[in-house]
Image (cartoon, rainbow, N blue to C red; front, side):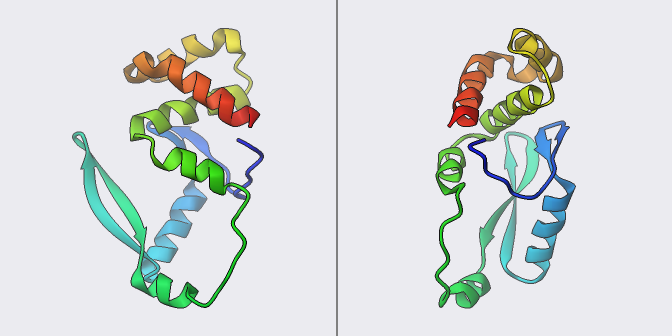
Length: 132
């Protein structure tokens, strides 16, 4: 997606792309006090939201770092609903693992039947993000 490399590998999981390495990093930052975890629910599904902590702000206040290349992409995705992100990431995963555009909808609907109504939008968004 726009060539952004996070240095992490992802696999397709029940709710979209998943990275064990990213989970370890998030847990590490949380245990050091740089992230605050807030248990929440999306629909009936339990999940966790993360935000930076006051400690993070304190430690980072004097630093000026260039914005990463993927900043614009993150801003686009941050406002999307969880199901949209799940659908978009599934389309990207399928395309990057060799699914042809001809077979894409069929494979997507087999993997994620609950997301079928949003397939066209997710496909268009994924293709746009991958082209950008």
